[in-house]
Image (cartoon, rainbow, N blue to C red; front, side):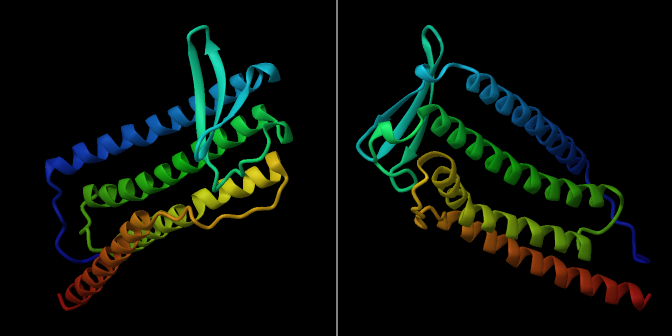
Length: 205
């Protein structure tokens, strides 16, 4: 760009450092949680239990003498069938690992896009560049896809690996997440418009 160099405020540096910590910290937590679930998966089958509640399943396994880890799954994603029809250990691992991986991947991708936007500002660029508009667009799409597909993917994994009963529920869509994603897409269009104005301004200098 041939325009005036943008000088970032010191607060952007702190934000960038915070996002760096959050990004790498999340990677460390993801690895820790996955390893923890793998360790739990080494426990014998008889330690795992499946309890049918009023509107959800509770899959539990004792960690220590007084500590038990549980995951809850609504009946909309896991049919209220007889507990003898599926393996409680497999159900626990599928639910826990799927939720963990999907949530952390969405978080890491989103943080990564924001981190790159702030990084471009710290490099002296204007915030209103096409690359940042594209990053915001990707962020909005990622939020929408997670809101639409996270529970559906869990539902499919349960059908394929646990119950082996084909039953897809589309009621797990997060409307709040979709609205947030759409708002981010609107902001990306504002950034794109600002970037085009900036390029037009630079070309006249």
